[in-house]
Length: 300
Image (cartoon, rainbow, N blue to C red; front, top):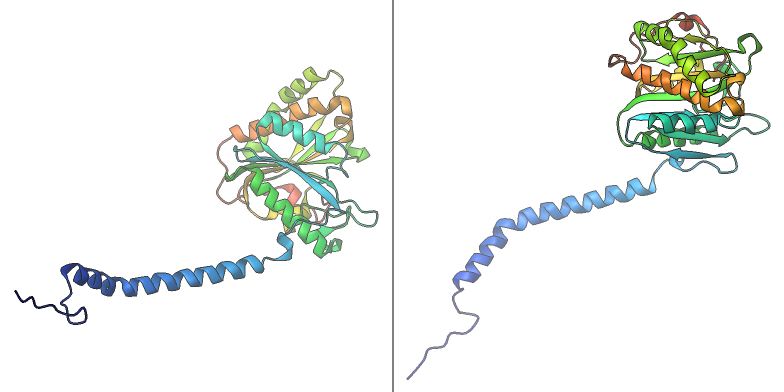
C-alpha cells in the first residue's frame, strides 16, 4: 500500500497550532505594551532611588541623636530640646506611657556656638524668628524629626501633638503656659475650668507639688507663644488636628516632681481629646491675644 507522506514544510497546521498562533497574534501587542510599561517603571524607580535629597538622610550623629517609639493612637509626645530643656526627655516618655502615645525625643543638638532648634529648620536659641540662622544641618535635623513624628503616630492621622519644653523665667516661676493649634476658645475654657482638679491629681502623686498657674491659648495671652514654630516650624505644617506646645517651669521639672507633672500633662491632653472635634482647618478658632505678640517672641 502506498502512503502519501507530506513534508513538515508543506503539512497543514493542526488546529492546536492554529489556536496558538491566534493567541500570539491577539496578545503580542498587549505583551509589548506591558513590557514597555515595566521598563519605564524600572527606570523611574532607579532614578528615584539614586536622586533622594540629602535632607532625607539621617543627620550628623555628632550633633545629637533621637529616641522614638511608635503607637497606633494617632498621638505623639515630643521633646525637641530634650537636653537643653532639662528633664523634658524623661517627662515625654512618662506622658507618652500614660497616654498610650508615641514619642520623639531629641538629645544633644546644643553645640557651644548655636543650638540646632530641631522643631524648625534653624539654629539659635532665644532669638527672634528673623534672627535665627537657616543652615543645611538644621534643615537635615528638622526633616528627620518630622519623619520620626509621622512614624511615631503609627501611620494614623495625627490627632494630637504635644510638644514639651521647659522654662526658667523668674517672673513666671510657677506658670505653666500652653500655646495651641486647633483649639477653640470654648475648648480652652473647659480645660482651664478643670485645671484645679488636674492639679489636685498631681498633688496626690507628689504632695509638695508647686501651686501652678495655667495660661492657655486662645483664652490667655502667653509669653512663650511658639511664634517661630508656628511660622516656619512643625506647628506651621497643618499635619496635626490639635497641638499643645507646653512650657513647664523648672519647679515642676525637679526629679521628685516629674511623675506628678506627667500626671498633670496627661490629664490636660486627655481633656483636650475628649472635647468636640476641631475644625478641619487648624487655624480656625485659634485667634488669641497671643497672636498680637511678635512672631518671634520667645520662640521655642
